Each structure stands twice: as C-alpha cells, then as structure tokens.
Length: 102
Image 1 (cartoon, rainbow, N blue to C red):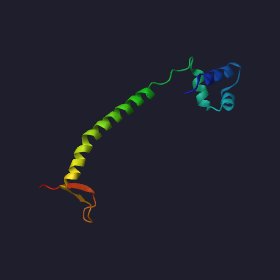
Image 2 (cartoon, rainbow, N blue to C red):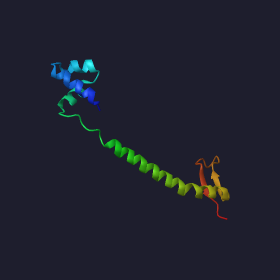
Image 3 (tube, helix red, strand yellow):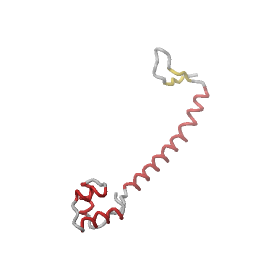
Image 4 (cartoon, helix red, strand yellow):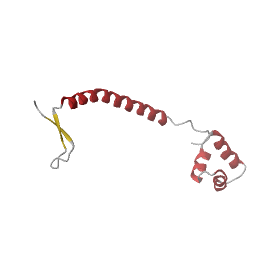
C-alpha cells in the first residue's frame, strides 16, 4: 500500500498532465499500481487482514502453548518410566515408541 505522500505525488503528477507511463517511470511504481491509485478518490484505509492475521497467530501460539503444557509432562514421565522401547532396529526403522506392558 502506498504512503499518503506517494499517493498525493501520483495524483499531482497526473493533474499536471503526465501520463501513467511517465508517472510510473518517475516514481518507480508499476503502471498497474499507478492506474489503481489514480482510480481511487481517497487513499484506502490500512487493511484489517493484518490485524486478523496477528490475532490468528496469537490464537495459534496460545493453543500450541496449552498443547505443550498438557502433552510434554506425560511424555517425560512415560520416558522416565522405562516401560517403552524405541523401534529403531534394522527391521523397525520407524523410530516409533512401543509401550511394554509390565
């Protein structure tokens, strides 16, 4: 998204008679970008999807933390109990844990 100053520059150059190609050359923006922002009567507000994305990331991190809090301690106690064997022999290359009943 363009800054307000950039949008105003594009509109100013256009009002002085410069074409889209010349404005694109002078500003370094793509012709499609220049055309898009010339069509707008006002500069658009920042998009809310960034806020929604940040909220989603926060929700995912919260979920991940709760999963780790709930899953790691039982896993650690399971490993410490030594009631398992790692299936990583030549015949079992899965690297999976197998529970051994006492």
